[in-house]
Image 1: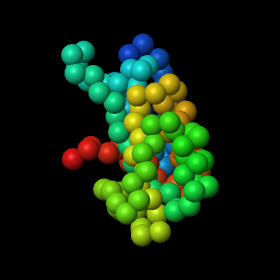
Image 2: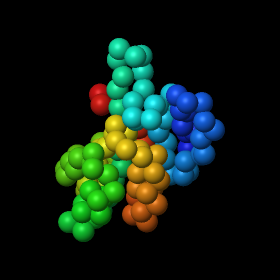
Image 3: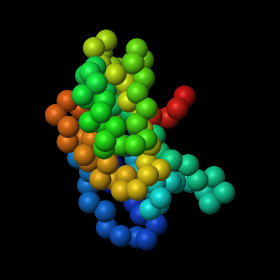
Length: 116
């Protein structure tokens, strides 16, 4: 899996993300938004975590945008003993949040969610 590089409105040279992250962060601004000036939007992503309150609390402490959807498989295909988590980049230090999530031993991958 190839990690996407994040572009930045300021033109800085971004560092590559973890190989567990498959989210296109090209043209995402410092507020975590991308798109036309009159249509900026957050980039949504999803991943699976093992069921259990301790995992939920750990993820929630890293990502305040995290929404937990037990029973849903998502596009990523969570197993029955996992919980689908959806978050977004419209938050402070979104790149670091994604890296911390990918660094959790029980998160296999983080993929972009297109809210279909």
